[in-house]
Length: 228
Length: 378
Image (cartoon, rainbow over all chains, first blue to last red; front, top):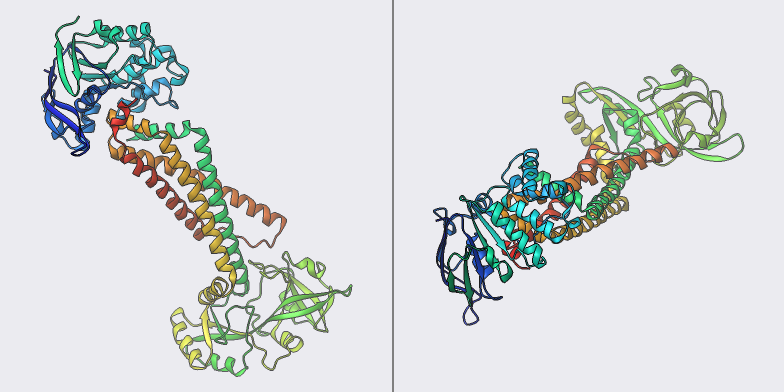
């Protein structure tokens, strides 16, 4: 099991105005799984993703990734955990517009103190994987939304993370492009060493999931096994 | 860490508008600070021209004397007493005053007159033209060739004029390391001729120049002179006393200080605000870096590095610009009183480092407070 979430609760604010974003959420994710977390806005999907990613500390419960209880780690250890174990694809990509595509992809390697030139070499290889080898010297704003999404994916996988986290990956894309991107991720990125968690409310990409869980009001309300 | 710093540099250089604003802002501040302090140091140095040019180890003077230009004449017996103080190798009188020169065309021009001890000619500057013994000829004066010589009609050897209604002949042309602050031509002659032709007061001796037998003897000489009711200062002490006078007893020091502080505040404002805007513009991206796995210490290092890069660039350009302007000023106005010293370079550097640290601190405070959760909010 790559990820185990055990009775995680997260609230914001103090009583009596306390709002519960997650209520005793538990789930497990295995290697080679492409798990979708779906549900309406405000259901707690993104909060759960943040807790799993070591970004938002839960008020109760545990998150274990590759056998390590991540919320027992110090701030620096958590940063290292995110750097070495996770790959992120943010909804708004959060690419650096002043860096070239190649440099953007190399960022996680640079943070891992891989030498600059070596980072760029590896980034170039990954850009080939996502089919953007010829766009390496362009800045992200000169690329289409789909291409920027693929750069974000390239950046997320360049350091070969065990767990890939995609937050609303098709939110800024048209239907066909969204499906192509997610199909690409499943066919080219998912493997026996890795799991992928996708937060989405785009039902057009549901067929690509290996499993879907539905959330409402901070709870998992439905677990569908092996969609595809 | 070098990769992270390279990333920081690329982010900084990528935002050209803010990068140029930062560098120009700091350059401008450094330029103003350098110019202000250079002018001040230049004025101070030129005001001490006589101390530097004459080069005595110890100067004996009336206790109320603050600068070489404002001497209070002493009676001759002081010289005799000083000569008898243990530790004094030799002591000579010096006349330092002003004379009114009437040029051949009838114009009048004030001049500084230095009267050197007749026997030793102690304090004689190097001659460009003429011979040292010529100073003993009748009515002989040596003129210093500097930016002010032209005010005497650029005299050559043999030029005659009147000084305080006495005939004077240029018998030599000398050069000195530091020009006068007050824009007056300088004439050297013997003490005897100077005191005979120029003063109107009862006492005529402006200073006594002392050469101690050893540096260790200076303290004893100073004690003995103090007991006499006068003051003996080493050249360094007299220079400091002169500096303090201009710094604290004229408005000049305060004005320069205020201008320097204003330059500093202007630089700090421009750099601080622009850097803060730069950080704000990139806040979400720094948040993304934090989410991806950058440690807070790495983000701090990035911000400090960016701030240091613009600060050092600004410092370099500012110093270059100030040096260029001063060099140009000296080319056009040879007596231009501005000088760049290690002190004002160091002061500008310290101020730039403060600007850099404050700017970085403002950005760092913001960055350390970023919640990486922000990257998940659309």
